[in-house]
Image 1 (cartoon, rainbow, N blue to C red):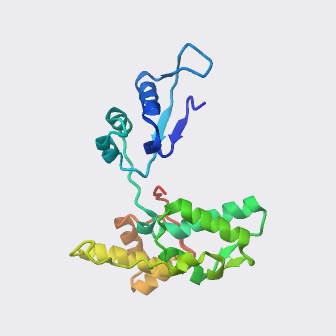
Image 2: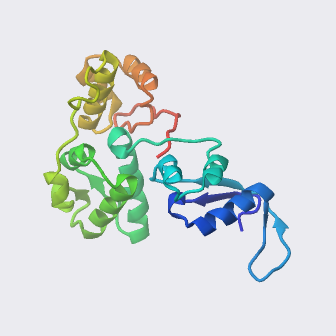
Image 3: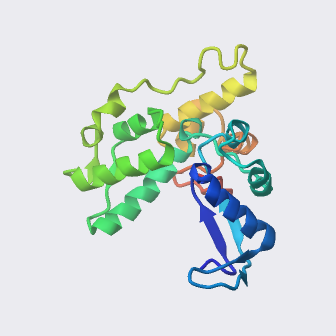
Length: 235
């Protein structure tokens, strides 16, 4: 079905050894035998795989084939957890609000500033999926077009907020790591608005943009009328 296109395999680390053997054979031979057929056919497919598991540890434990791991690990892309990408949260919220309001055929809803602050400070152990489910729930159950703290689960309010610099990580933080963390914090407080964040930081907008590029934080929401960066980061 993916001939000439891309096949995405999510949670590849959860596949059985039997499936791993078949997948490896397809990658090596570039052929598959369709169900009900006896003659294999050639396929030309770009394969992408994702997992939350540590496949290197799984290989050592014998639950994931080493040859398949090395065959898949040609161009690895490591994605940080959402709690380390606070600048992505407003971007994702905007996307999910638009998407689920359209699906539910309801007027477009917005997030009140205090609710946005709450969402940016939450640690999101379930990453993007948890954020997506939270926004969908708020859209379906929210009573107004401006979602407030009361429209989100109490567990978000009870959670410990993200700190600017976590104790012991690293033991002796560098000036750059502190600056990056502080820019994260200010941007979250400003709701992703770069012009407002620059004013709080006491720097001009061009300096802030250079720092965003330096720390790879350029994919941000800008509600202050500024231009949105063209650079993109994976979710």
